Amino acid sequence: MISSDKKVLVIGASGGIGRTVSRLLSLQGRSLVLSGRNSASLQKTVDDLHNPDAHEILVADITTDIGRIALACRMEQGDIEHLINISGINELSAFTDQTANSIEQIINTNLTSMMLLTREILVRVNHEKPLSITYVGSTLGAIGIPGYATYCASKFALRGFCEALSRELSDCAIKIKYFAPRSTQTTMNSDVASAMNTELGNKVDSVNLVARELLKFIDSSAESLHIGWPEKLFVKINGAFPLLVSNNLKKQLPIVRKYIG
Ligand SMILES: NC(=O)c1ccc[n+]([C@@H]2O[C@H](COP(=O)([O-])OP(=O)(O)OC[C@H]3O[C@@H](n4cnc5c(N)ncnc54)[C@H](OP(=O)(O)O)[C@@H]3O)[C@@H](O)[C@H]2O)c1
Image: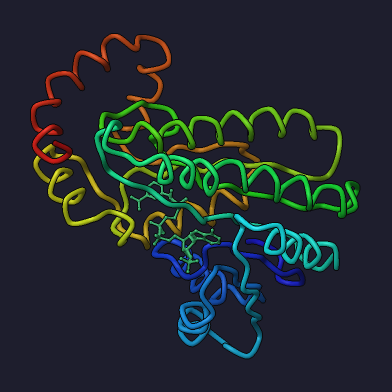
């Protein structure tokens, strides 16, 4: 079990996975700092928690300097033992149909802002004091999938960032961790994306399953984890024999084209 004397900061606590993670953490008796851009959505998360008065809300947009500094200053207070960054955005689209603004927003939210926020935190906190920082990536951070070129780029890079930083900080008490779910039942997946998943026979996990796996992972000594079978296996096959996965995805492309144009 995670010790209960320190707080957990959840960024993206108003989202599908974030809300369930927060509920399970509160049931473990943890005190939470819940963050996202929208105070009303965060209040809705708090209202569903065990012992609502034990938690605080920190409204912050991680794509802004002011939002990142507010989060880093909260970390500097020293009472947070785990930071779980579950924020992220996605868009299913043919790459050529994505606007420049959408590409920039996805890379900024899922990657650049994460890196800038991490730097703001690392320059403020004591590196000798235990702290874990967990980033939520995706299976699509290890397998490039048609219709998700920009999202894959952001999550591949996030995975690389975590791996390198985890090694760079391996001589101090700060642990950098990377958790990668497969498709999960949240509103991040549009109706079109859900219909495509169904037609492709892609398995979709419940938020409860993903949240439980995430909490087990945070409590473990593992630095990274991909969940979902057979996706875990595909991640390994894609690393060793990418052509096999390319051939399989090429067979699926006519179905994908129906949904992305
Ligand atoms: N759902 C899936 O199929 C799936 C699969 C694999 C990985 N993931 C990853 O899991 C994570 C959570 O996904 P989800 O399905 O729970 O998504 P979601 O329901 O859309 O929630 C996304 C969360 O991110 C927050 N967020 C977005 N932009 C932000 C910003 N600029 N600053 C601060 N917070 C921001 C949102 O809060 P506000 O909008 O209220 O600010 C919300 O709390 C994401 O990183 C996603 O890439 C999801």
